[in-house]
Length: 198
Image (cartoon, rainbow, N blue to C red; front, side, top):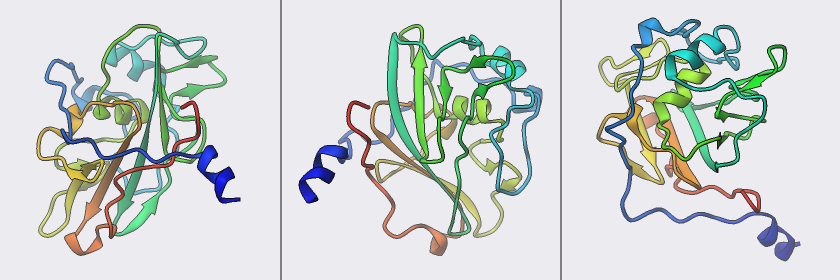
């Protein structure tokens, strides 16, 4: 049984560089994004307004996931110490028959980056596709106040720069938390067991 589990999942190490920021990424003003939520969790997959948000991001509405770039990250979201589900089918509109280069397939928290071109993507762009406000100080309707703060970690390292510009790279473990320091997950997740060939 232990050998089977070893071949089914692998752990990714924490990088020595820590968070990587993409200064060249253009991010739209959240005020201009249709269907952006500013409410408390849980949040659905944000299909209303998706195509318009993709247009604002400069993302193509794809018939299928792109193959020039295909990588995965894992996202954990906690609000006041409680895990928030990252929904299935973020970025996928079954009625419109299109898919975003950034999307999810299930509720595991795995982000799929499937682009028809080689390019870099940022965490803020994923939240924009999801339709959940994400800034340096706010997660949807939850904004820094007193001891309650937005904190983000990449492979266990605190992100101290512009969290919207955090690079999405292969086998990254991202933790987004809102609340007090005492409500942080202990320990902060710093790796994830991805399925093989992912």
